[in-house]
Length: 190
Length: 190
DNA sequence: GCTCATCTAGACCAATCGGTCCAGAGCCCT
DNA sequence: AGGGCTCTGGACCGATTGGTCTAGATGAGC
Image (tube, rainbow over all chains, first blue to last red; front, side, top):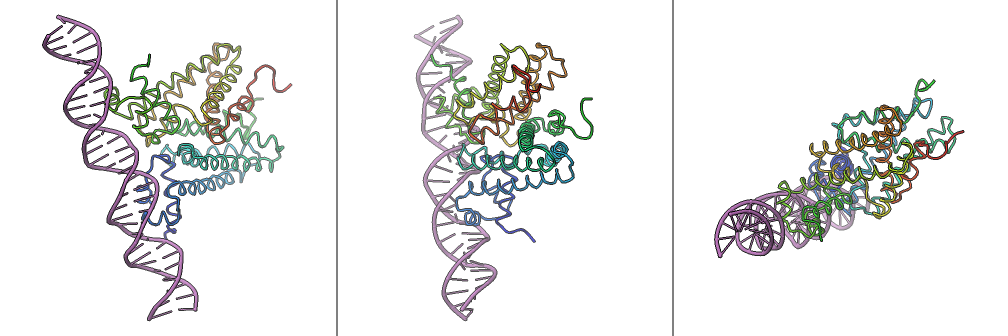
């Protein structure tokens, strides 16, 4: 019925780290949320908190890849898929109570710049860009243009996420497609 | 010779919070950096760490306003000023050792979503946008267009800052003007 | 010289931090 | 049945956390 302990730990940690940052969450809180004792944590993650953070970031990154796929599933063009993606993320933001930011950067930008954290973060963000770029190429964009637009959207989403958290509102994410000049159904200028 | 204790505290705190986040820095570390005893902190900031964080965020925000002014000082157009701004921030990023992000969001996005922190952050970011928009209007943009472009640049900078920290490189900030299609000396498309 | 307010200095506190350790529960395999 | 795993449960640790409190240094105004 319940998922195994290791997964419960990863998911609870991902949730909490995302809300309060790596340094903002104590092991006790994670353990309580996952209903697991300390011994289990150090059995599954010998290096403790940092191992757990890396694992939960990976789990969160995979979730994001899935969301990107879903956003582009019904999209005819790259811009359409990117627009849907922005709205999807905005919806998740609302559901989270208007606070949660990017799952992986919330986790990995703390930790005093630990090199493994930084590398993992760079890796995940780049994976997202390449993933979105591939979906753009599948919709007729050239390799260069696809990567360029994917990168622009990713930067826009990261930036909008910051504004959303500040304002406790998903508006910046919802307005992002228009702000970036993404063309959806009709052209924006005649 | 030395600035007074209160300022030393604010500046040391701003520096450290920016590097490690609100929860990532202990009072002991701040006190050591500012060469001040604990009593002084609680004399100048009765509410302790959170007061200090708010004050250092304000100080950092004023610094950013100054940087924006400097970037636009010699600019003929909004796009030119915005481009200079990106490069200025990229340079600061390099100087900081390739790690420091946005000074105010690094400080205020922690703290478990404390309402005062969020409000202050939203206030500062909006002030930056309005400030940049005013500089755009002074260079011939309409009110709407100025605000729109200022907001786009601000979101782009915030997003690029995240990527820069991940990659330990200021490249995303340096490429941002081109990515956003800002026109500097020559038009990009014939 | 005396007084009063401001500020410094740091000892001290309970609470929490991340991490270690080991006894034993549970389960599979022989 | 019994040996040998994986995994759980939690007591326990020293270090550090943010915060309180008070004694005294400092300087301005009388």
